Image 1 (cartoon, rainbow, N blue to C red):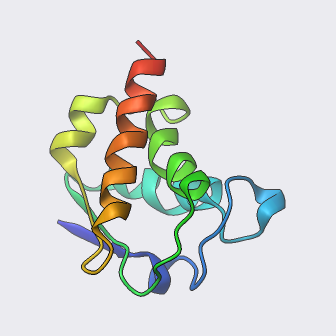
Image 2: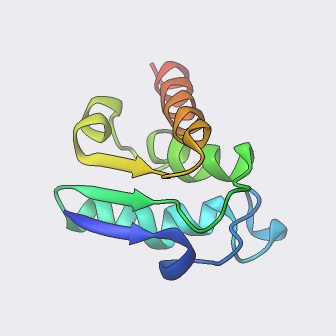
Length: 107
C-alpha cells in the first residue's frame, strides 16, 4: 500500500478548491498527488493527520473530483482508497459523503 501524508507530501496547510485559492488547493492535490498515486499503486492510504482544518471544498475537489474529473469508479475507490485522520473522524465522514455525492452525480 502506498501512503500519502498530506502535510508532508503535499502542503502543510491544504486549503481551497481551485488554483486561485492557492497552491494547497484540492485540485492540485488530486491532479498532482492523489490521482497519479491511484494510477501507479493498487492501494493508496491518505493520512490526513497534522492538520485539523480541512475545508469541505478541499475534500470535495480532492476526493469527489476523482470520480467527477479523473474517471475513477466509486466501487474501485471503495476497495483501493483508504483515508484516515486519527483525531478528527468527521473529516473521514466528509470524504465518504463527497465520494458518495460524486457517485450519484455521475450516474
